[in-house]
Length: 144
Image (cartoon, helix red, strand yellow):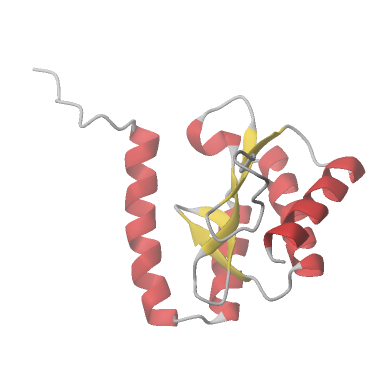
């Protein structure tokens, strides 16, 4: 007899389990920047080369233009939160959900509002100087 699906893929179920584990660890660590950085570095180390390059690029941008954001993982993905612990920006690696491209996403606290409609997620295939410049401006706007 086939196992009944709860509507989530294996990758999605794994991400939910990872998030529960993260929340327990983050509760123990509080808003400790070093603990968050260690969890982000660990998440990046698990990525394939293409996704790791994107994560490193995003980490560099956030460190330079928004150093007050706190590194922390988000469903096992590298991310950066505000002082309230709310996620601002994160990388969804292509390899995690077996998708064609990685996504850099912005959550509600990001100040990217532009009228009645604006993008909050961007497909990214590779990190380049042009991509770095674009995300430096987006992250800067997100924290302004």
